[in-house]
Image (tube, rainbow over all chains, first blue to last red; front, side):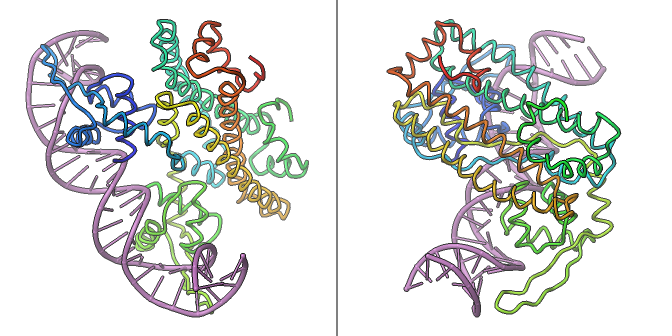
Length: 206
Length: 206
DNA sequence: GGATTCATGTAAGATGTTACATGATTGT
DNA sequence: ACAATCATGTAACATCTTACATGAATCC
């Protein structure tokens, strides 16, 4: 079993789902395409971790609703207590930030501005889901939604922080007639680089 | 060309490196094993994006020092201005957090505590590199290290925030005789869940 | 009329990990 | 003695992405 398999178990532990639903649900936790999920579901069903029930629909394609078995629940419970492997984060933006200084200032600004609007979109989109999950708490089915609620808030928090970081960098570029190399020289000259960065969110004027 | 290729170009844009050095350098930006890097370097060399010079050593194995070519630099410069694809983040911890409520409170605490020490280690380790990079600014070769400096600070900032999040969750679990479900009910009853989470870093008492 | 949603599946290809292979030097 | 560092490479395997395949219903 691989991590995707455990992610599926953790989703189905909450509520039985079709493969199609799982694709959407897992997107926030462990993104995977349907071409990865369907074969995995078959294998897990063969191993007795899941069972499915075929649901015939009219106007829509039929579907299979998967549920976790006792064996599946035990497998998940055991895995959860094992220490997780290191998180992997792959972000092209970071490579580009690393080399943007080769290019002109306009491109640098655009790169960062685009990132900001991208992040803002995500935050706005997620807000709806958070509101929904909050609703569910009040309807008392919350225990199963609490983890997801925490997760979404955590993601939003991190994205908001990244927005602040981007805006801070942008500010430095836009504020005056600084160009990138002047900016760097200024910061170093002032001996403030480290200080400024570490307190970036509190700083509004340099 | 794939992202790893561009990551290599961006690293070599800073300074010529052996494949072995690249593995270490790229770890912070786009982690890859040597088994992925060496074949990629060969291909890029064949495509004229890189050149290498064989350096014979005594007491150590010989090595190849790769440098970026004019064609390589152009390729990188063009790619940098294109909009980056979405970041990918795969973190088993998030799945476990999502299902830890199936398990007992002790396991939940341990999961989070381990995460904290893991993050603290990373932050401490990174601090040395940041100090080194700061040194390099002062030695005036800084332009090529500035991006990396920003990056490491940003990573540390994010990890520190995650530590705060973990401690906040842990605090809720440890502080009193709350168990997980009581805690959730309390928060919901008080209608403070959203508020508390969004201001988690400022909150010390509930 | 064309895109999107619902719904499942397979196949080919790209990307990433683990293991195999070699070998002197230095630190514990 | 044993592990780690330096240094490069290949092979097998696991994982993930993109494309192919089908088809009714609904929305713009």
